Amino acid sequence: MPFHLPAELAQQPTPFYYYDLALLDQTLAALTAAARPGNFQVHYALKANFNLPLLQRIRAAGLGADCVSGGEVQRALEAGFAPDHVVFAGVGKSDAEINRALAADIFCFNAESVPELQVLNELAAAQGRTARVALRINPNVDAHTHAYITTGLEANKFGISLQDLAGVIDSLDSLPHVELIGLHAHIGSQITNLTVFAELSRKLNELQTWLEGRGHRLPHLNVGGGLGIDYHAPDEHLIPDFAAYFGMFEQHLQRRPGQQVHVELGRAVVAQCGTLVSRVLYVKESQQVRFAILDAGMTELIRPALYGSHHHIQNLSSQGPFLPYDVVGPICESSDTFAKGVLLPETQRGDLVAIRSAGAYGEVMASGYNLREKAPAVYR
Ligand SMILES: *Cc1c(COP(=O)(O)O)cnc(C)c1O
Image (tube, rainbow, N blue to C red; front, side):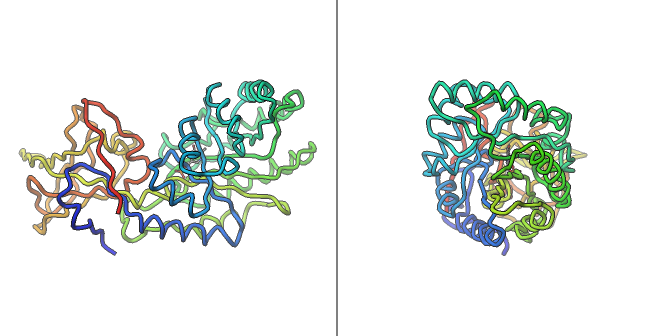
């Protein structure tokens, strides 16, 4: 189905984020249907988008919440996620964040270092509790994605490296308020080459066998998130191939009887249901370049400036002949560019423009730079 902006939104002041809740529901239905046969537990990664109307639907579909800050833990609880469906990851959890999550009795902390385990033990002891912990390992698997969203290589700050793992396991003996319940890995984002997940599974298999040799049986394995989406042709793949994704773990992960497998998807759940809608302020032509200057910029959607990412851009107002445009925002930075040399139907001041696949890592990264007002969200 080609993209369609509900008619009543054509009069809405721009820029704004438009969320298609019917598409979100269809995506959630496809996801839960694909997860069910293998009994995979899906935790939604809130950092991709934490708007309440989305979270409420995601929770109603039966997903849990994967949080990376105390604010996200609080938001998940406000959105009605049960504490035992909330996990808290992140390389730098503050004492205050840990204390609040302990008090809420969340399901699990994904811990990333020995010093963090020591703090978890101390704070849990002070509250008379035990912190359930999964160790986030750095499996040194290349996700074959953008360097800034690769997280599972030795050079990245995330996780416990394989050389350090034995020492970390030994340290658990002296941490009575920490209970090891699983292993966790998250190797990157926007992963489209699914064989990467086979390699991750093989690493986890080895580690699991090694841990069992040391007397640790793990009730949970958490393979993280990272499933990519089609930014180039969103209408051809509005719903990611969740079955192929789970199939990789079905095939390659050696699951013990009764063992739970968790996945943490963010982007694949919400990216396609969000569109940044903007208007053309000016068309500026020089000898070399034709610029379409939008009223939305990197303050609304920073991904192109931050990662050089591609978003499909459509002029919703024009039927004219196609011409190449550099599509830019109004912000005082040269990196405030959505696309260079993109073919659009002949574009004029006032045309409505859709920047597609903006539901994940879009609105959540908005800033007030240049004293810009926050663009509102509308839901249909
Ligand atoms: C960001 C993140 C995710 C979600 O990643 P996606 O690529 O959006 O699926 C999952 N787990 C952790 C620990 C994360 O930091």
